[in-house]
Length: 110
Length: 118
Image (cartoon, rainbow over all chains, first blue to last red; front, side, top):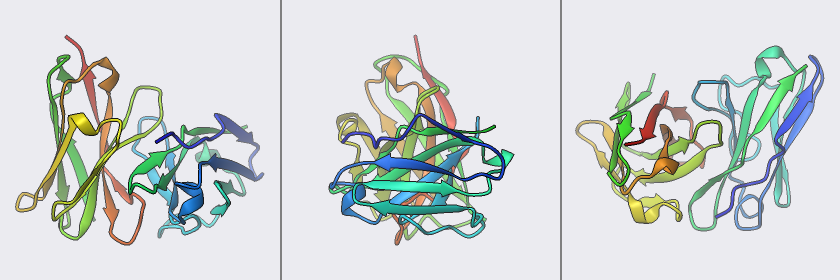
């Protein structure tokens, strides 16, 4: 299984909105509505931000949202805040009941 | 609330077996999937394996031949064994919980750094 493809970095100014893409295949992202997104601050464990493409766990701000079109999923962050600066990873369930992660995207708040 | 804590040696010699345990506190190990995920220094996340508390398992194909995971329900613990380790297995190892209806990891341990070196 190959890692999902994410941009290495994205950036935005406070208050702006950004989108991070996550591209897979019909055997993972495109085949199931089981894409999740994780936020990871330096030296910390990942935190679940979005599950099942577009659902937010309790306690996650509505400024984070997820979507999917074909083999590409996206994470949108609106009203950027300094605390959003982190690494973001997408993940998908696969046709072999496995799990695959993306390579990660560094979000910089300018 | 439920917390996960990884434990095990921080240094393992090449060709030996890496062994880690994850202790679940504040909740039961039953009725969930439990997983191991690792992150080499400066790199991304890599899923290793998961298992249901009752015993069914699924492994990353690239690691399957070297990995064994198990659950000790009475102790509320699950474990990872990775054999024939090399420097490429140096990473922070995380344990994580996957609730049955989800295909996502909602609770993670803090992670434990394992270095493979002689």
